[in-house]
Image 1 (cartoon, helix red, strand yellow):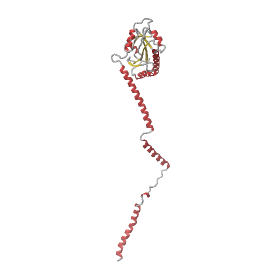
Image 2: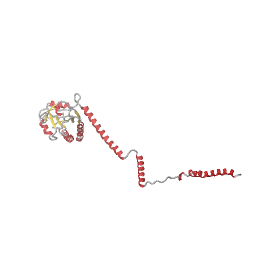
Image 3: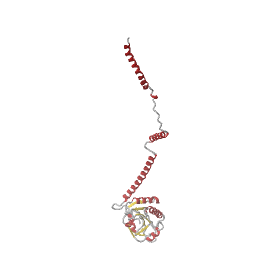
Image 4: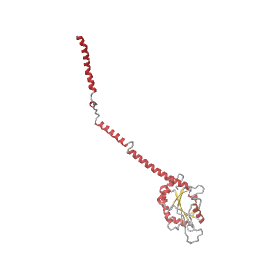
Amino acid sequence: MSFAAIMPLERFVCRQCAKAPLRRTFASISQTPKHEIRSRPTNFGSKASRRSYKTVEEAKSRYRLGPFSWQAGALFLTAGIGLTIYFRYEKARMARARIAEANKSIGRPLVGGPFHLTDHDGKEFTEQDLKGKYSLVYFGFTHCPDICPEELDKMAGMIDRVKAKHGNVMKPVFISCDPARDTPEVIRRYLAEFHDDILGMTGTWQEVKDVCKAYRVYFSTPPDVKPGQDYLVDHSIYFYLMDPEGDFVEAIGRNFTVEAAAKVINDHIADWKGKIDRT
């Protein structure tokens, strides 16, 4: 075999051999295990690391708590309490409004109406004199042994509590169911022991009967009483609250304490939207 014939083969072999190391190099790189390939460590400093850790912890905490926090809970609780108080107040106010509306005079009044009496100063007094202020009307008599004094003491307490909150907006009235013995002078001296603001009323037997009928008050005093004659007097025991327009608002019975009765009156006065005399 000649040298020329051998040369191409050598040239071919040398080329193959030249390529072999390159293939091995790429193979060694590609076959390097994944766990041996590491990224270059990055050092951001201890402060940055702590900040990053804190942010992650906050994110985890927020994820656990959801969208709520103690500030949101406090706001929710405050709003709930405020709404509860408001709705209770509105419910009570609407109940008072229904009572007052149901008792208002439509055509013939249910309670109250025209009357003609004489006050403890000897002056004429009618239903028109009740207008302008809230009126608290009580029926009794000066010879009453126990019930009337107790109720007039309660009336005095109600007057003071209403004045303390709203000023001079109420006119308290005592109407005698015993006109034969309760003259204006007798009534004036009697009421002075309870409260100076109470205005006493009396009249003839027929006038007293008419006002008792207007207020739906039971009245048992005999019409023809002779001087010195002994007799019984019986009557209903209620305080009648009238608004500044002269309409009946509510009846307050003996089951009410002074505080409870004063609250009823104060609440109705607070609900009043019209004019009211404070003189």
